[in-house]
Length: 596
Image (tube, rainbow, N blue to C red):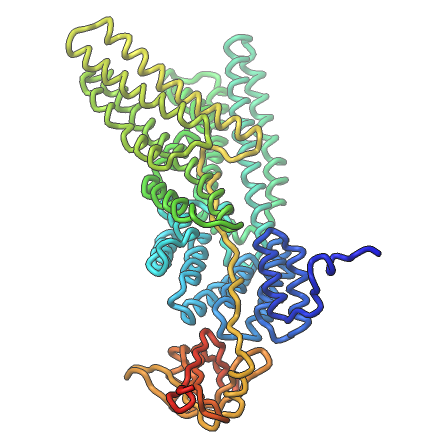
């Protein structure tokens, strides 16, 4: 007779709802979300009031990429335990990806922080929400607050590094608070980007072709007519891409969120206008020689505008943010996680290693961009000034040695070339000052050659990443650390505690107001989901609304040997308070029974 899976893994039929939740959490940590979903559903079937089970169902759906199924389960968990901070975080994590519900996610994250100010999770979630909207200052403040609570929190460290680097989210054109689907704004951005690329490429190629035909084939008139045909061709291209935008009312905000997209569009319009003016000047029968620089300048705008914009963008991205501080924070995240294990550690390690590699490339780009004008200015004005180049690579070397990054074989080669370039140029300046001309000349050649070789290595590394579809040495390869939230076990009330609150004659509710701690009499009962339903005195309502953290005290109604204190979060529900337990304390009263 064969044995089934249940027999091989133990008798699952006798498990309680909480034991099934423990099993679901273990399966999630083992990377088996489909099996975890089955276990969490069994827990919910056994106890429909178990909010922990619904949180685990939501988390399993999220791991499987089913956000539409994860949201209802998370909302059900909040309904069952309105004062549960893990349930609020779980719902916030899902709603931030649902179009039109971003503000709800912010509200739930804020409530989680109000319910559990001693926990770092709510502050990390608030930091993530700010970072995803590009609010780097607020994100930095939230991550620092989380690290004040838990200095070893890995997600806060990694994402703090991104906020220090002024990281742009993957969809910088799309505000997550917008009610539209990100795919709609993505299609609009794609249409604008394609039009910009096609128009600039078309007029640039046409300019080179017209100039070549006029200079080498003496087909000036025919070439100019062909240029006007190119202008006419731009009209259907523009109309075609404009129809694909769809969400024109959001385009101005998209350009504000993604300034490089706006710059590209403006550059395209300028290139087309310059091309038209260039054609008009070329079509005139007699143009004064004074217009020759203008004619050449217009052609330069059309042909060189695109590469110049790309160079400016690369330089601006290299000098944005604080990469050395970001590098230090990300490296600390790896150090703090090194002694831990599990799926969360693997994810933190993977994200941190990837981001460290990109940050080192950014630091290298900064170093190279300082060396080029320094060496160029020394060659043009005073060669001895090149001695200062020897100090330029120091921050880059320090950052590389501190992180001990060994994943990118191209990176140490590029760093060595930059260091060699700085040292050789400095040596060339010194040797020139000492009148050792032949050696100085060779040192300058070596320095300039190493500088060019470093750029070649960077270009080869970028081309390899583009060809393979992997992360490249640019900002777009940076990613957030997004660990799952909301899996913490709920606080259970055992049968003795339930019995105490169900039959206690006197119950005391402790809360705080502007005058300090207060107590009031109350009546309480226990719901099937494990919450306390408390009817307090009138004076407690306003204070609890301001600070929902309370403690409910009761004594054993039968033998009066022990007392029970439940600390939790109180939320108003009609004419009662629903208290979600955070901590349960049980103690004995002094008496004769302790002499045994």
